[in-house]
Length: 114
Image 1 (cartoon, rainbow, N blue to C red):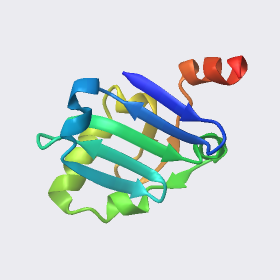
Image 2 (tube, helix red, strand yellow; image 1 turned 120 degrees about the vertical axis):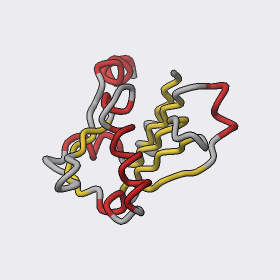
Image 3 (spheres, rainbow, N blue to C red; image 1 turned 30 degrees about the vertical axis):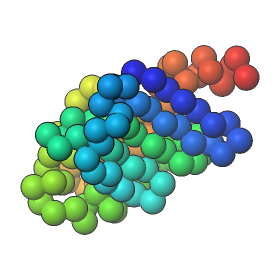
Image 4 (cartoon, rainbow, N blue to C red; image 1 turned 90 degrees about the vertical axis):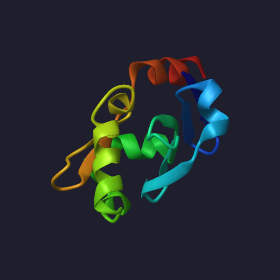
């Protein structure tokens, strides 16, 4: 896993498997500024979160674009999001589609080092 953070733009990119990075088949916008890229067999490749630190401070976020995905894709995405490694970054209620952007401890280390 590779974590890239652009402090100036407040953009977090998490690349789950370097070798799969070039094989991203689709990108799904879960809400404005949060995109999950997956392979053809729905394995996570990359997660991009724009306004990362601001998002971690919000009490709840509506993942409205996830809710609008076709039922089969939405189900697959919810299963991915509920399991590691994605569950370390996002928590989403599968009924309400409200959730939180998590701030994994490793990112706190980056923030203190900057």
